[in-house]
Amino acid sequence: MTSTLEPTDERAEAAESPAPRPRRGRRRSVTLLRGSAAVIAFLAVWEVVPRLGLVDRVFLPPFSEVLAAWWQLAVSGELGEHLGASLVRALGGLVLAVVVAIPLGIALGWYRPVAEALNPLLEIFRNTAALALLPVFVLLLGLGESSKIALVMFACSWPILLNTASAVRTVDPLLVRSARSLGFGAGAVFRKVVLPSTVPTLFTGVRLAAAVSLLVLVAAEMAGANAGLGYLITAAQFNVEVPQMYAGILTISLLGLGINQLLVVLERRVSRWRPATG
Image (cartoon, rainbow, N blue to C red; front, side, top):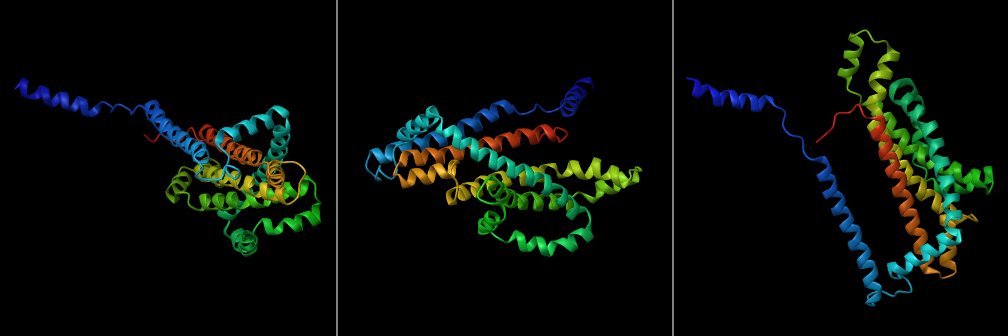
């Protein structure tokens, strides 16, 4: 009798004991290695293809030449000057967009009369290309920094606004009803249920806006500026300094990657309450 019960008890204890968690560190290392391998392979192809004569190296120089040009620009301080100008404009417009678009998105998602009143006007502006409004911003604000920051703010506002409004509208109604049944008032429900639930989607909008900020800013700097990464790329193209042109493009890519990673880290810190997934 005892011998038949012991395996059952052991199986029950095994079932009750928590399953070992996957080794997240190892999984992340494997993911990082795979991603690094893809980047290294791309750079190797970039280096080899021009040297083999498969493309004209005048128009696509090897990656080592681009890297050397990037280092020269960095050592001379020219790259830092252009990078600083672009960074101030991009972050300035992005921060202003966050300050304006998040409260407006919350209002659109939480209050139906506000959405019904503003949606037609917002749809008109949302479907207007930001770069098409560049002459308008220049006429109103001049050729200085204000017009570029305002243009970036306009372009960045829409991903943040739409994601915030969608996040508020799609909060689980069961959570809201449960909070109200526990005696929470409207303000407490909003602070303790609605706002925490919107964090993931809200940060998605901010990350999309960060990418948009660089795209719009570089185009605006190409159209009219005396500093910035867009100006650096255009000036290098006109002067047939192709490695410097690619160095500017590479800097924009690294800048976008850095901003995105900072937002990912910030999202993880803000949403520590969320359960781990695997």
